[in-house]
Image (tube, rainbow, N blue to C red; front, side, top):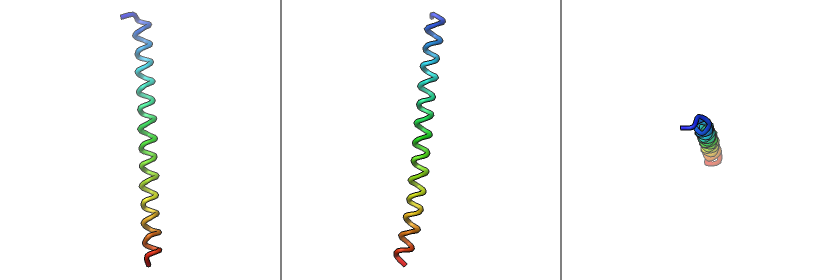
Length: 50
């Protein structure tokens, strides 16, 4: 295979991996926020119920 083509393909693959990693980070952050919100809501619910 042509070295330039191989290099371009490797760059593209690396770019895809970076995008996937960034998406996974966003998903993990969103899940953390949701878990935190749930925790706060339950505290407020207990407070309001008492």
